[in-house]
Length: 187
Image (cartoon, rainbow, N blue to C red; front, side):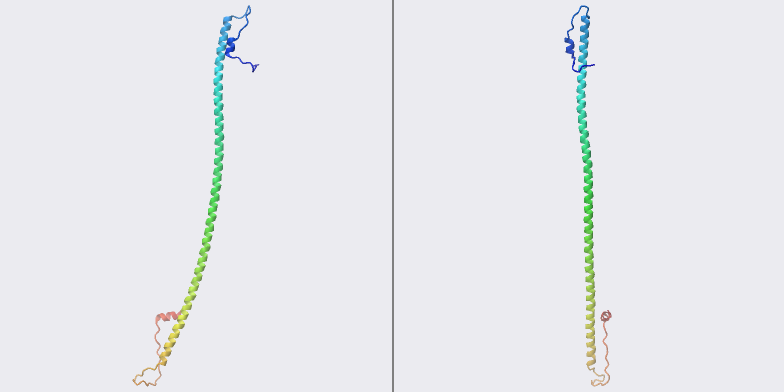
């Protein structure tokens, strides 16, 4: 069993004094062993220090790697969250644009329907005005024709014998009606 409080250094081995006895160990061989043991302890101590230094370096690297790993994981999670947020925002914006476009299309459709109704009403009003105008024109033309016919029948005709006293029946000759007037009257 090794006592954790007991630490032996190469200097301790070199300075340790063995007691002398009569039939003891050969002092030269003991000194040689002490020297070899001290050298071995020095070598092991150097190796141990190097290993501890490497261990500290590896521990520090491991800590740095763990920090980087944590930072990368955090960055990855943040990127995933950001991607999800951007996707959600893009979907919301797309839905908003779509709703606005639909509302604009409906507004334009209603405007066009209203304009179409207005144009139909105006066309009907124009058609009524046209019919009214043609009816008034027909009445005017018929009145003018009646006046022309009345003036023709009321006016004495000069006689064919030249004395103006022709007692024969007066003949009324209808004036020819222009073709444009006939077409107006048919409507």
